[in-house]
Structures are given as C-alpha cells and as structure tokens.
Amino acid sequence: MLAYQYNKYDWRADIAGFRTQLKRKLTTYLQNNLPKELSSLYEYALAYVNQKTNFEVEFPSEYIYSLEELLNINWFPKS
View 1 (tube, helix red, strand yellow):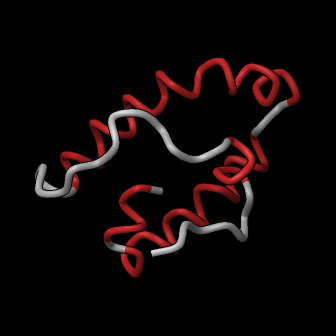
View 2 (cartoon, helix red, strand yellow):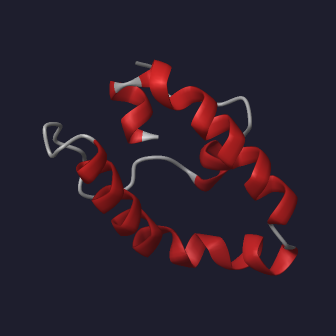
C-alpha cells in the first residue's frame, strides 16, 4: 500500500489482483491469526518495497493501515 501512494498507476492492478487471490485463499484460521502477524509481515513488505523503489522513498517504519483496509478490495489510500 505504501508503494501505491507513491506510484499508484503501476501498483493499482497488482494490488487488486493480490487482494482477489488473498480473498480466495484466506481461511478462517488465517484471518483470525493475521492480526498477530501483521507487524512481521510489514517488515517483509517494507524490505520488498524498498528494493522496488531503490531506497529512494522514505517509508514509515511501522505499518499505518488497518487489516480491514488492507483486505478491502475497493480501498486505496489517498495520494
């Protein structure tokens, strides 16, 4: 989601596709345990997006989106 705020046109379709895949595969067990893992998952995502942007953008060190926002097919952060 962070990368979307800084490069939304390139990422919007990727995010929509990922959310669709996630929605199909997200079991009740995973959905119940995901909030506990969100912080560590953010660390992996942050490492990825830093590589993707060649470390040229300073992203927040902690996640700033709610799990509900991240899983909502129609939600995108305001630019």
